Image (tube, rainbow, N blue to C red; front, side, top):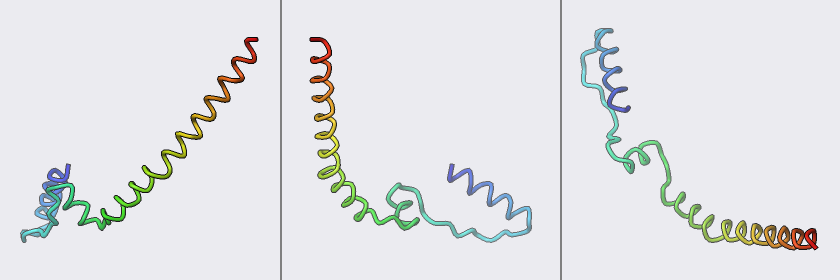
Length: 79
């Protein structure tokens, strides 16, 4: 997609009479693209680790409690 966009941009500028080299960023890898757009990958990894260590276990515990409550309600309705 990026290469296609670059080609279309080059053609457009050429049709307008611009025939200089177009300086474009190197986004040939995911890491280079992330760096170019300003993503702080170290900070994002910290946030992800926090989420995995703190939020997910909390959600799992809440889900377990809900399921246990449903099981108790189901048993009492069947008796």
